[in-house]
Length: 301
Image (cartoon, helix red, strand yellow):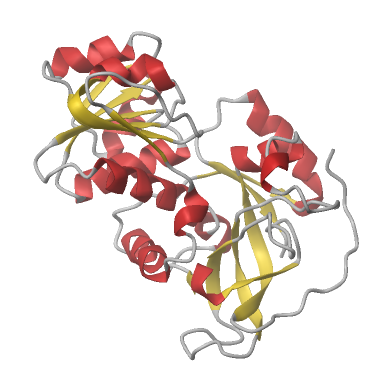
């Protein structure tokens, strides 16, 4: 269950900054933490557990050893590791490694800015795992979702042809992300992708978590980027590459590149609804009910 707690104010240590959080995005990872799905990753931690991996706000303390890239009062976004001793982003103040913090995109408010890093980084890591050559063809399932939408936009920026799936009501949305072809989502999506790419696609970003069901869409020797930890097996020389956002959360250059792509319009940030921080439980219920387009955001301002 989620409840509001008063905890000691965290202090920034060496190489860390403290952020006065104005907005924290709500993601399926947060629900998984609440329901015990991350217990295996934090065997030595004791409650309370604070969810949240995406924060936007103002730096209010800089620890020793942080370079002048970051300063008190600066508008920033950060990836937050909820398994750390400081906990996650659902907090008025959060301490994070400086490497996981970059300036907030210019002209973007805190709620929208808070939806960028975890999902866009996941999409970036997935495409890097596929490593398709410019001009190649990739597929994205769950393309109307947060990770899927970013994957389509980043793949197009990489010079790739994109086949994406969508429900009928989301077809124009996904086309708007830049997808070259949109097929109907569902159990037979692999067949529909193959109809457009008879030899199979070079790689597939599985934003709908269909795992083995989408392997037939991939060419021999291609790559499946999996977002929920499935690692195969797959036949025909296909590599299954599980992708986890925390693997890249201290890659400051990668995070800042995503920030710049948000500024130049390559990436589209989508907010479904902003709720007050104390409505976190309601936000989780809304997320679990499904059907959202864009991220729910908690307002801590």
